[in-house]
Amino acid sequence: MLKNVIDQAPVLTEAMLRRLDRPGPRYTSYPTADRFTEAFGPDAYAQALADRASGAVVGGKRPLSVYVHLPFCESVCYYCACNKVITKHHERSAEYLEVLAQELALNVSVLGSGQAVSQLHLGGGTPTFLTDSELSNLMVMLAHAFRWTPGAEVSIEVDPRTASPDRLHHLAKLGFNRLSFGVQDFDPDVQKAVHRLQPFALVRDLMHAAREIGFESINADLIYGLPKQTPESFARTVNQVAELRPDRIALYAYAHLPQRFKPQRRIVIEQLPPPDHRVQMLGGAMAGFVAQGYTYIGMDHFALPNDSLAVAKRQGRLHRNFQGYSTHPDCDLVALGVSAIGRIGATYSQNAKTLDGYYAAVRQGQFPVVRGLALSRDDLVRRAVVMALMCQGRLEFEAIELAHLIRMNEYFSAELAELAELQTLGLCELTSDAVQVTAVGWYFVRAVAMVFDRHLRADKLRERFSRII
Image (cartoon, rainbow, N blue to C red):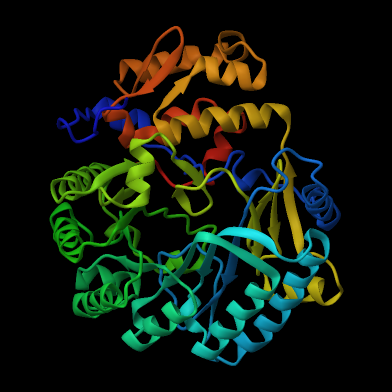
């Protein structure tokens, strides 16, 4: 079993930092979304749904996950890389929900109504941009289309600036049992630099209200590597978050890609912390949360020991999906709304990224899928390898060989040879029958997984991703 990453202070040498300070995927999927092509469109998606409905694929009747993308925000956060629509005109959400209902009906017409759903997640954008009435109508719409399994996770992302205790009560009445608060950083100077002002007291009061209401799990999102952050300032944020005791904490590295995400062009690049400070923030946060009683789940997640995510980690049942680490096995994912990414069988799909394109397709009675991917046998093999490393921190050769009828030493001869370099850096231990990520390696687990990514052989592709450090 992988030793706790905080058992001892990791030795991060300058050579290691230089070697690993490069872009890399977060691997919420493999292949990653940048590999999707327009050759996969509405017809291919419809066929994938039909195959699931008919049981033509293995596990065709397993529970679904459902993701709904609600893109509207009242103001722009400069760091944001999500697909969003900035507007103060709340009436725009009514049209969006009408089209969303039509897209949902298209999916149900192929899948059949009453499909069992074990996970529902509302993301954005800002889902709490919607009024209480609109959220009620959306949940009724979904309840008519699907059937929630006992113990289903029903979660929503909450911008503290658009919530109140009364709103949280309403969310609980609608069946939401998990909340995710966007915190990012509590330092006022950092908040000003990224155009997201939300005092600590505001988040504290909302979390206390959520506790009193009885939500099963509360998550807090943090980002390190933002402008004006320092190891000292971020340590204060870590202490404040630990004081609030959210059940789960997601700690993300800021991805500065202004060529792709226009709002990031407002960030002053000289204010971004250097790589060694980023590593100090990550290491300090990991040490701080573990010292406060949190279990380090892996890469970017922490959880209290009694949280289901921590239990899954102890039992070797972790999985990874488009929302990060999860307790649920690999489920098919029906994704609704503009830009939403789904997974059905051995396929991935993504909806149109603009409202105009999304509206036009759905109103013509077509699935709004504009790109996607049908996974090859090689993709499936490598996905199993990447997810084993990302979730368990250990790759057992025999398990892959039996599941995919390959010989690891032959199929991945070049990759295993490349791992030798990472082994010299202390990131992994390579034996004749396994790869074990080390405690230090968990800081850079993406680098270990990247060795097996066939699509990253050309360096130019790597600039599409955030830097590992």
